[in-house]
Structure formats: C-alpha cells, structure tokens
Length: 177
Image 1 (cartoon, one colour):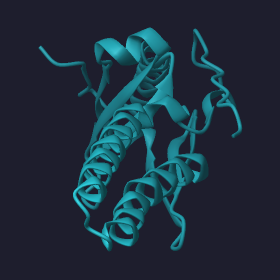
Image 2 (cartoon, helix red, strand yellow):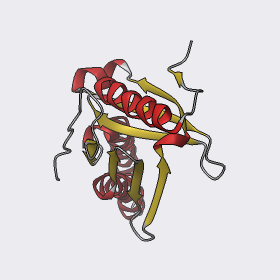
Image 3 (cartoon, rainbow, N blue to C red):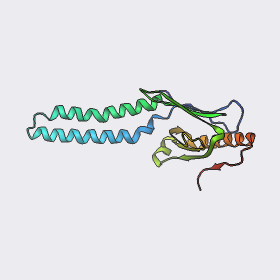
Image 4 (cartoon, rainbow, N blue to C red):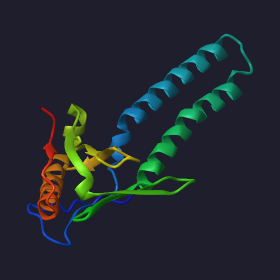
C-alpha cells in the first residue's frame, strides 16, 4: 500500500498543497476486528457441529468464512484507491473500485471544518476531517483516515480564511461550539 503524504503548511501561500494522499489503512481496524471475531465464532461453530456428526457443515462454513474476508478485502482495496488532494483552491476526492468517482468543492464554499479522532485513532495518529460547505450537491464531506488531522484542519482553516478574505466573504465558522 502506498503511504499517505501530508504536506501541512503553517501559512497560506499561493500554489501550496495542504494534503495529497490516501487515507491510512488503519482506518479499517474496527472492520478487521469484527471480521476476525466473526471468523473465529464461525470456525468454533463449525468445529462444534462437525463433532456432533453434521457432515455438510464444512462447505457451509467455507462460504460463511469467505464473506467477512471478501468484505475486508473490498474495504482495504477501496481505502487504497481513495485519493484526496487539498490545495489552495479546492478539495478534490477520487474514489471507487468498479465505478470511479471524482468530486471537488471550492475552498470559498467551505463554511465549517472539524477534526475528530477517537481514542484508538489518536494512538495511530490519524482522524476524520468533517467539512460543511455551501455546495448544494454535497454539503457535508467526511474524510476518514487522514494523518495529522488537527494540523490539517488548521492549515485548511487558514486556506479558507485567506480565500474568504480575498473574495470579500465575511462568514466563516471554525469548529463546533
């Protein structure tokens, strides 16, 4: 898997990139643990059923074990193929496996930027960036698995404030109260 690159700027400069990369793969840790737990439970149930003389349990168990593993593989692959770029003009998101999608929002449309990190995400150094925008088609952006999410939020906030000042836009909210 490719490593995400976080180029977090401490001040807003024309042509700078705040973030260019993919979410960290550890964002899938809860799903990994759920898949592991369900696989262990299904294996224990299959062993118990086989010890009681059920002969068709192994093919059923193989099919039931394949589902969590395929789900996990799909999610990790989807995370790997997600690419996010935040520069001085817009936020662009590329994603999808079978159907590739690209979406973007101009920085002047961003109204609120929030950084969230659960306790286990803080241990691994990443979090979720929640962006509220005035865009009609996509008013809420939730970008999971971004490294150094608080520094990224600060850099994006500076970018947005600078764009708003340049364009004469007076309304901007930072975080939630």
